[in-house]
Image (tube, rainbow, N blue to C red):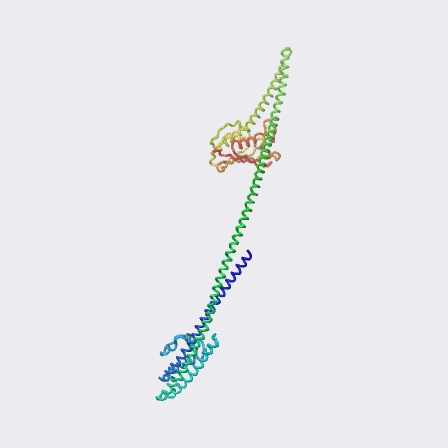
Length: 522
């Protein structure tokens, strides 16, 4: 994998180098073309200026017009660098300037002689030799033209046919034409040398370009191939990684399944243990309940047995006295009083046992045989408050009831009243002193159900029984009328009958708060 990455980087670098070298070669080719164009422009300047010098010289010796002589000297001065060289001098310049008062077609550049211009350019030695030979021969040609000018200038107002012929013959004879031919021959040789050099260079650059193009194509193909191989290797590695990951996922999944099964088994064991604990708690609670019930019933039952034995004793005494006719009136009255007292004790304790049994039946809900019906909870609250006031005449207890506009509910109204009555009676018996207190009942809707909050500002629940206050027979008092079944009854009714749940909060000395969820059993 690392080897393929190295090969890919190598071919990428080689391709980049080839492209850069191609750009350099292309710029070199452009430079060669530019130099060829520049060389052609210079050679054209030389040729055109030579032709223009010949034309101006011949025109002057024939016509004697000073304008042609002035053109001649300007051309020479430009060639020698005495005057600025016009830009684009290789184009038509003096043909435009022949007309009088005609502005120059091109602006002027710098003062640079033809010889300096030739030396500054990148010509070969042979090319420079030909151009310098042309330059020297052009100067010799100018010398002939200067001789012709001397024949014309002193006698320009009195030109004879002989002087005109002499000056004209200098510029049209065989020697002058021979110099011109040699000059043009040097120019042709320069063109040929320059074209040969340029052709060779262009051929070399073209070959280089072809080689670079071929190299670029090969590098691109190699790079593409290396990319393809690298991609295939990556795909293979990815497949292997995916296969490995899939295998690991399957193993992890199987491991999770095994662990989940173990957790489910453990959870089932825990649930079974919880069920056993709950069953044990139920059995323990049942045993405790039976023990408490037995204790609660045993006390009045013992009193009844004792009272019955006393009644039996007095009945035997009465029967014996009557049969023997030895009973006095006073003793008869004592026996009757004792019998009445014994019967009264038996009746009271029998009523206590009956009341206890009735309350035990109430805890199981067997006495509340009512059907589901629609009613307003506020009516149940008001009825429960009124009933509790009749059951306990503590006029110094203040009630505050807060309810929403709509309290319509579908449940068991008598059960709701029983729950509230037992809460109020519990506050009467355990929370308040003779100074009384305050009870607040708040009803709030929750979704389709209701939350009933009951609070008092009484003594609160002692810490010793706070955790088991809802168990049967748990109470802070122990009198004949107090059985400790009130809150246990409330818990059973709320859970079983009303299908809700009960929460409470209390600290000793800070009152008590019950929160009852009443389900709307629609």
